[in-house]
Length: 96
Image 1 (cartoon, rainbow, N blue to C red):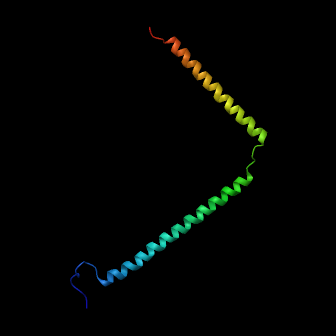
Image 2 (image 1 turned 180 degrees about the vertical axis):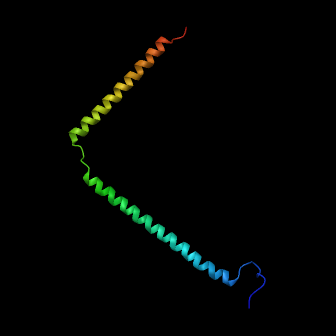
Image 3 (image 1 turned 30 degrees about the horizontal axis):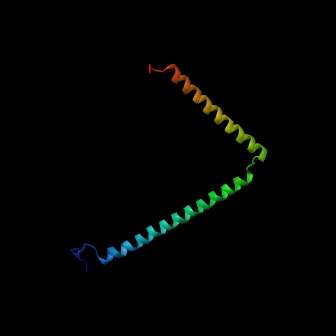
């Protein structure tokens, strides 16, 4: 026998039975998504490790040389910036 009116609360036992599989599907989809992301993350880590093995690292001499060049250029730019600032200050000095 079919009901002609909805019970209080608006949901029947049939509605609850239909909702349970839908929740299971959502939970399964979330679990599959988590697994897919975990596999992608692991794959990415493996790719990074593989790439790191192929890198040609500089020798100590090359590393020290490059560091000295960098520090030297920073000092030169700092001196240049200071000189330009001092020159601009001297040129645009107001009547103080």
